[in-house]
Image (cartoon, rainbow, N blue to C red):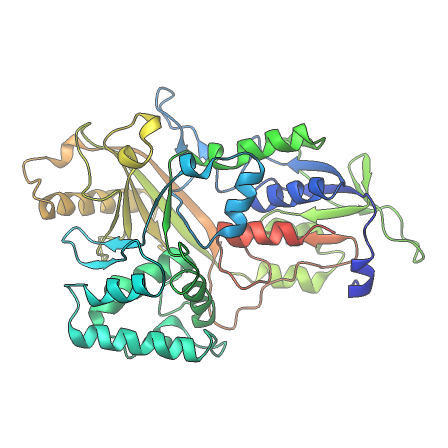
Length: 444
């Protein structure tokens, strides 16, 4: 393993290869270029952006969709800064609004556009769907978390942390926050990581808890602009370049290793692939690291895109949904309202996190959930036949399961190689912010 002192002495211009062009790999490539290194970015597929990318629908006449509906929050400062570096206008890229987790009946938490802690105090105090006891228990828990400095034992789950909360608060706030941030059911999710998210979002600086709803498809939001910036700054960006193995081309102990990928040699490698691919590439150099990466369990995220009548709108651009057996989606997004430039009025996206349903079952159940939602919205006359499924996107290994006592692989498996991705060791769950931070930190 490389010593800290050796790591800090690497200040010369290096030939660096980044394997993988998801958001972590793109962040690493941009950081390396900023530091003056010679950058080669290698991506196995023909698409930039990894799992957070745009996709073509089955109908070529239809605008691009996202490989899963994404949402950011104001606390994602590294992600937003990286976007600005490559020229993204954040005002045009996002619909920014205070945290709003309301359901179709108007219940749920909605924060006013005020600074912390007034926004949180007012949002809780004026919530008409919670009783005085509900609010008091939430205030007590929040105060206790602050006294704990938002730290807890590794073995605690989110359910353990919230055992004294009343059912309405649990259902309206804790469960949707947990599944959206950690993509893991609250009774299985890490309390330690959840508290970190709560600290940075709800209890962070002004704007930290704001919802950032993308007005652009994911390709335009960051990957496309990142590639243009990299090429403008001298990086070599190559798609369709799958790396099957790594060769140590200099095995002498007196020199830092040189790494060979195909016919080319590099001073340093950044592995920005999914955990299972990284384990395959690095097993012969650090078998223990590969074993840790392979033991990560993964959760599925499905997004069902449904086209409704052109005049149809949800009461909010993002609507929380009641989940139960047969009603798996946690959120519905009105992309017709959010993505106005795409010209798709009536297009909805239903997001189903941490669910093991098949593609056919999740599609069928979401349509049943939509039918019930129409009745709840007073749209009884609008028949479900007026809504057509455009596409169902299922990422079976979208994120790692963020469970207690989880051991995540380190970012530095051996000398001359670093790893980045939302799954490497760090304080965040599998989020875009975690991926970006790991990419920045992976560059010598």
